[in-house]
Amino acid sequence: MDFVRNFPFFSIMLSMFAGILCSILPRRAARWVNLGAVGTIGALSAGLLGYLLKTGESYTYLMGHFPAPWGNEIRAGVLEAGMALFFCVIMLLSLLGGQKKLEEDVAEEKQSLYFILMNLLLSSLLALLYTNDLFTAYVFVEINTISACGLIMIRGTGRTIEAAVRYMIMSLLGSGMLLLGICVLYDLTGHLLMSNIKEQVALLAVSGEYHIPLMVCIGLMCVGLAIKSALFPFHAWLPDAYGYSTVSSAAVLSSLVSKGYIFLLMKLIYRVIGFEVFKDSHIIDVLFVFGLMGMIFGSLSAIRENDIKRMIAFSSVAQIGYIYMGIGMGTQFAMAASVFHILSHAATKSLLFVATAGLCDVSGGSKHFVDLTGAAYRDKWAGAAFSVGALSMVGVPLFSGFISKLLFAQAAVNLSGRMLPVLVVLGISTILNAIYFMKTVIRIYTPVKENGAKGNQDGRLLYPLVLCLFIALNVILGVNSQPIVDLIEQGLQMFA
Image (cartoon, rainbow, N blue to C red; front, side, top):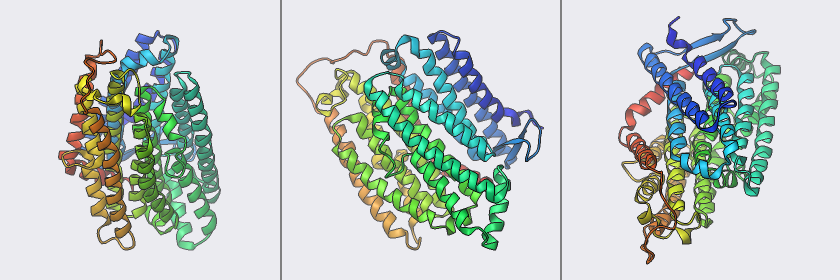
């Protein structure tokens, strides 16, 4: 066996070991261990991606070298390795971009705990990407939930505790539905490995046996993951969770955590249920309708907000709606468009949260629009970065958001029963996005009479560099999209 095939296992274990190590280290050492672990895992993921592109096929890794049903499996393909690399890049930039605010927002004695939670979060995301065992996926879903909840409430204020409790209640509801679905599916098939389950589900679909229980378990798992990823109307927990977290937490939660659950849903569709079985179910229609509704109502809620961080959070509801709309179209190209939008949204939303921190910092720490007037002149880097993120969300050419909307529109063309709703809602959503993002850009670039900043920017030499890297990532996705889309389509073929 080629040594590089061990990299997924090494990545998961390295992240978990880094979390354990951070528990006995002082805060500064823990921060360097966390950053080092994320960077190393990113390098391993890049090496694995290169190997898989060279071989052109996925592989399974037996944990402990025991075959099913006693052993556990990791499965790695182009899409898994590419997503792992991208997740590491986003997490690294988010941590570096929010480093100074973390020291201000989190008590010194809690900062080591913060890096423990961040390492556990990364390990759970990697496990969701790579695991080929359905129950193992559930276990890491719970680890992901606990880590995310800790990151929300780490500041220890009343609003963050309230947000964490609301998040935990909704997440546990989603986890419970997912577990019930897994239990029913195990009862029907007798397997927990995804590939084995898919074989049995295909036989059940052909014979028509246990049709209703099969649809029930598919519905439970899909709705459970929809709740955890904040699909409309299950999004009530999201604005406070993102709006009152630290900068790095908000960037990671909005960019990665919800995407990990959506990626798991895609694995269920391709490698557990089977794409054709899922396509023939009515559950796909429900996800499609909720996705369309999320695109509209998430944007309407963002327009009404007077708090810039909550506005960006509500924007995430709309963007998650885009992803579920693509899943609900039920075609391979639409699914590829959804995967690309995961990348686009992760790169853009983390950029927006990190840039917003700079704008608020020079506006007396206020998140209200009235106080942000002229903030782009007080922090030119943050203003430029926020403008790039806003243009991407609206769908202006050159940036990644434009490619996402173009791919969704292309996927909808000639799609019976779906084309008109998709194109109409895409148009409405784009107009709504322009209203609240361009309103904000105009606000931060409106000149004011006051001279000087209301905050200071001392010690932020790293901050402009992080913003530039985020902008570069967004532009790369926007101008070099075709190779990325080709890679995504190759990864989806390996999924099947």
